[in-house]
Image (cartoon, rainbow, N blue to C red):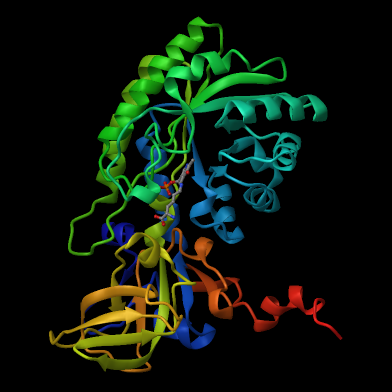
Length: 430
Ligand code: LLP
């Protein structure tokens, strides 16, 4: 995989050719499997994981892929095969990891502010690596459940370091007023309450998502390191520092982005802190960085119309397939799959068929003139795309295809309408 593919895997070999994913034609995939269609490059995901592995190779570490970014089983399997661990935030995500490889539990951390007793029991029985505990109430319940199922659990408190990270307000998490974690100033007192069924083995932190600069990660790690030193003095054998996820990517094609340099900066911010502490394994929870740019949605243009002065390109994918533009005003590049034509551009809103004004993929976007029937690719959709998809407007969720070299296989078939109705049919009066 060359450098270009490492950054963006959906490329045309030259101006006269159509877009491909690895060695597979996107037009061919759309014809065979229909649209909207999620397509992922396995090689790209593997290469991204490898970037992490090599950047952190100088310290003991474990990459725990954040399952929420894309939880499709074949993708978890791809990471399991390469030795990754997982970060899960629900019993459902835990079950997904177990379905792929039950031994992967030993490399799984469980985060989230609302773990239920049933979810704790599942993770305790599976023997996970660490619970990232986010409140005193949770600590008490976990101690109770551990005693009940007779499984000792390793815990880290997820501390809130009060570090500001420049990102969208909905995905910033490390400030005191956010709902996440435990105020770092109170952490020592809470660790003291661990009791005999819980082993205080780590400290965890996660300051937010889509963070482009390495600086806040370093600042948070420094604060965590200070706490680790104090906890060790208090007698806790802290062996894990979980630095969370959050490393950002570049969604704008015109802005330069070097994935390798991005990880290198991130590693440079974290590694010295870990080295200075000594005796710890660094846990990392990247989600987006590993899968976002590996994925695209293929969608067909249904209609092109003009209302007043605005042009609308109506496509067959919608906000139920990819909600990021509607929810975070996120930017996704949209490109025609066919060979590139002249420079003439139209300015249009690219919208889906859902009955909401918020159902758009782009506004005032410059595009080459497109016609009904034409295939477009919405790029960088591998993270928080399918995992946030819904059945709104009773739209079956899209199929997913994983490409490996010349091979493409369906890893989740397109939902059928009957899949959507089946749970409700029994309620009909006969
Ligand atoms: N660890 C924890 C505890 C998290 O809460 C998250 C993301 C991650 C790891 C992974 O973060 P990443 O490396 O992917 O940035 N739906 C939003 C992103 C929500 C992120 C939630 N937590 C989006 O589409 O931008």
